[in-house]
Length: 371
Image (cartoon, rainbow, N blue to C red; front, side, top):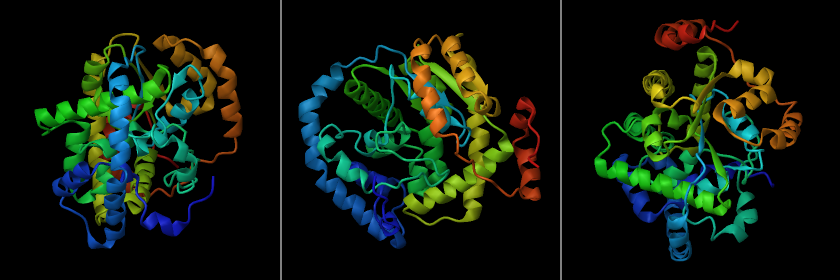
């Protein structure tokens, strides 16, 4: 893959595949954009117009086939707060040839990617080679969060918190917790979500989906409504490290995706507030998950013995095929052996604030401040 030139990041934007109607609604709902980001806005606007024929053709050719597609195998949802190790776990499970995942390609063009298959190699040239938040490799067919695809399809997605930071609080509450969301919008969200998963299932010959999305940590009741037999893997990590990693992630992603200005203080406030709401929601709703359909794992234990913990996941959740998947997973781990996690300088005042505001998880999981 050819590395994308840095200057392109000022214009290109992952919302390029959204419909013109959805794009207009997004601008209206979220108080428009700041003039600084006009080039990005024009890129999205023109791209949404130029990709309209592909969406219409996709609907004409595939709508009937996708509507008839059944998700017969319960999806496996990887949940947990952002920066908890969900990506590492997702990457590892995606090596199982019996499973399928939502890829970066799927999220860019969720309602037309089958039409653009012949152009995929060309389009991949314009993608960054690494994720901005953690330097992990980016591959167009590699596993990715379906939340990014929802942002292209729907007005309500956590990713819109990055696109429209001035309206991030409203977007977070409505997109993740469905608070204040109208019944009509929630029905539309469910329809878009199901159709997207069906489209990916259709493209992967009915294989079982493994889905990683931190936003789903706050949607347990809705996901169970849609998929009563779904499996859940909750991975958690030292909250102190989560704070610094999440703040860095949000800052970097905002730099690449934002259409509005924000401040460091606003980013920090969102990190503190969103964590509290997300984890309280998880603790409140996790008992809704039937016995045998949820496993909770500690990130620090997982990285010490990823294959052993993954085998345990398969056994606990009744997922078959670990023996056949193990060689592929081992090969992936060998390739990633040299990967280094980010190193942070820990501000003492922030550590004290984290202890005070996030103490409910720190005590629950028995974590200590980093040295």
